[in-house]
Image 1 (cartoon, rainbow, N blue to C red):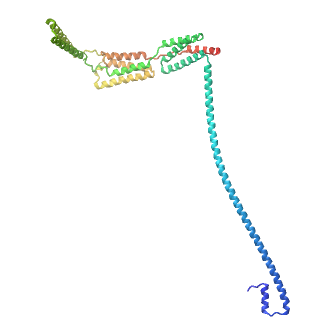
Image 2: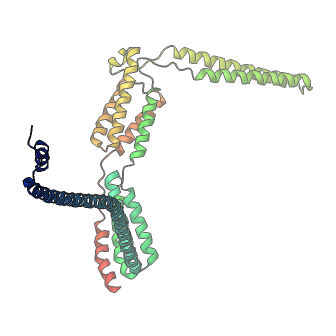
Image 3: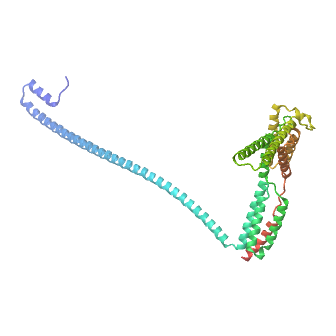
Length: 397
């Protein structure tokens, strides 16, 4: 067994041996010692309790402070979140404001550019209004002549330049200014030079080629001559007119009294005479059409088969179409070569005795004569006169 405390030892000693007077004092001292020890123990327990209370109080205080810190941290975190949200909102608003500012700046720059352009145009308008009348006339004539010169270079025709020079001459005549007389003489000189140079009407020549191409299908070949039947309709019509006249006279003779039998017999004889003359002429025409004598210098023209005639006409039309394209492209050497080949084919394979042959050949001849390169003179005299007079007009202003 474990050793007990002093009180237990004292109690055991009292039960083990009977008390004696000598031990009474010892027991009193032991009791006092035990009481003192008990007081120390009670004081220690009280101290321990006080220390425990202090520790508990300190722990509770610390816990409260920790809770307060946690609460403060949560509040600050919430505040930080709120501030971050507000900061993002403000950043977004700032970005939108920046975009609006950029858009407004671009709009202002565009309006500024537009205003600058309008100001420039207004200055030019003011300058143009501030020009004198003579200077305006000279500037307009110079611009018109230069534009007409460009059109002439593009189209190859002198007509735009002629029109511009005529209008310039008329305008100078209306202004009737002595200082512009030099320009008017230069315009008249260039106008005469341009008229003397002549011009090529490309559109008219193309139309003539189109007409010649259309007539190719109607031209008869030497290998397939067309029978002359033009007299037959005339004879039939004359015969019908004669019969109707005879019937009319017979009706008239039956309805009205005849003046004399001799005159009626002469009229009837004349009618029948004319009828037999027309019949004889018709028979003679038919007999002449049975036989035709033609001088052929190139025998191969008579050897063209009917199926080859189609390709012959188509090749000739293609040749003329090539000449038309070359004419529109102003390749006059090619035009002349194609027209020579086309005319040679016409003379070799087609019948010259018909009227349409002469018409087609004449069209090709006209195109060949007029399809030539024409050098349009430059209006250098007019431009030089305008350049010389314009500074003087500006100085007088």
